[in-house]
Length: 639
Image (spheres, rainbow, N blue to C red):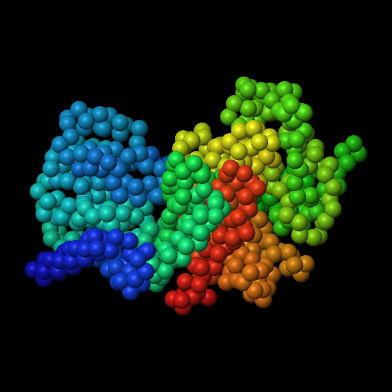
C-alpha cells in the first residue's frame, strides 16, 4: 500500500511539473529572448526537476544477456518502430543521436497489410526497438513481433494500460517510461544506449510476471547524455543568450551562411543547435544532422587515431625515422633524400622543416584549364582519383605528388612551421602497416563502434546532397561549387582520401570521438586507446623552443595565461591540459579534461569564397569557447 501511495505521489509530481511546463510554454513563448532572467531561470529549474523525476522513475524490467546498454554498435542493424505515431517520434530521433537507426511508424488504426509489410521489412535487422505509444491494438502487434530475435520493448503507457494489453511476449529488453511526453521518450532512448543509468522500480504489479518493486539497475552511464545546462549548474538563459549573440552577430556580418555548435560538460551535451542556412541563398535551413567538411580537423580525427593505435601496438614509433614507414624518403645511391632521418615525432609536432604545402593541382592545368592529359569524365583503373563528381584524375599522378614531397626542401627543421605534407601520406602508411584499407581501419577501430556513422570520407557514397553542406565555389581549379567533395586541393588529388583533409562529419558524431579522447581512450564501455597513449600524444613536445603543439593536437600558447584576452590562444581561460584543432573551412573543436568540457563548432565559412575571413576577424569560434569558460567560472565549477 505504501509503495502504491508513493507511486501516486510521483505521478502527481510529474503531472504538476508537466502542467507548469505547459503553462510556461504558452505564456512564455521564448524564455531565452524576453530578457527576464529570473523568470527564465525558474522555467528551466522546473524543466530540470521534471527531467530528474522522469529519469528516476523509468524502469528496466527485462535485460537478457545484459543487452542494455547496447554494445557493439558497428554490429547492429537497428529498426526502431514507434507504434501509435504516424511520424518520427522524439524517441526515434534521440535513438538516432547514438547510431544509425531505421525508423518505422505504425499509426493508431493501422491495417493488416501495413503490419505485414512492416514485419517483412524487419528481416534485414538484428535488433528491433519498439516504442509503444498507444495501447489500442498493441497486444496484436506485440504478439506478432514477439518471435523477433533481439527485441526491446519500451512502453510509454502507464502500468495499468500496459497491463490491459495482456501477454506482451518475452522481449530481450523491456522498459517502462510511464508517460508519452517528449522528455520521457528522449530519456528512455538515452537509457537504451547508456546515456543514463536505470534506477526505477515498478510502483504496481503488471500481470503475474512483474511485481511491484521490480526494476533492474544500471549504475553508470557510458555514453553522452543529452540534457539542459541546469544539470551541470549552468543557466540556460545565459548560455543560450551568449552563444546566440555571438553567432547572430557573425551571421549578420556574413561571416558564414550557417553553423552547428555542440557543447558537452562532464559527458552531458548541454547545448546543441544549428544556425542559419546551408548557403546565403537561404533555401535550406541548417540542421543538427548536417554533415560538414572538417578540413584540417581531419588530421586529428582521421590520421591521428590511426597513428595512435599503431603506435601503442609498437608498429609506428615516435622516434623512428618517418622513412621507416614511408620508404620513398629513404636515402639511396640513385634516390636522393633530405628527409631520411626526420622522425615521426618531429612530423606530428610540426617542426620537421617541411614546407607548409605544395600546390600539386597546378601541374594538371593548362592555359585553358584542366588538361586532357590528366583528366577524364569516366572513372577507370587509369583515371581513378575523383577530384569532383564526374572528374577523375590520372591514377599515376600520385607518383608525381610523392616525388614532389620527397624533393621539397627542409628549410626550418627544429622550428615550429605548420605543414600538411607528411600527414597527407597517412592513409597509404596506415594501409601498409595495418595490412588493411585506411578507411576500413578507421571504421573498424573507431567510427563504427563509436556510432559515429556520419564521420566518413567521400560522404556522397553514403548520404544525400541535402545533408552535406556545400563549401566554396572553386573558380580556379575544379570550376564548380564544391558540394560533397573535399574542399582542400591537396586532398582532392588523392581522390579525397588524405590525412590532412577529406573527412566529413556532423557535430554530434565528432563529439563522440572527442569525448573518447577526453576520457583518455574510453567511451561506451569500450577501451579504444590506452590512457598512456592519449597522455603522450596530448603533451607539448618542444616547449623550450616555444612550439605549443602536442603530437597532432593543437594546444594553448605556451604560458597562455600571461597573454591578454585579445592575444591568448585559443582563449585566455584555456587550461594547459586542453587540446583541439581548427579547419580552414570554418571548423573547430576544443576539449578540456581538467573541466570536462567538449566544444564543437562546424561552419562553411568558405562558401561561396575563401576570401571571407570574418570568422577569424570576429574570433567567433574562440569567443564562444571563452564565453563557456566564463559561464563555468560563474558556477565555481571551473579549474
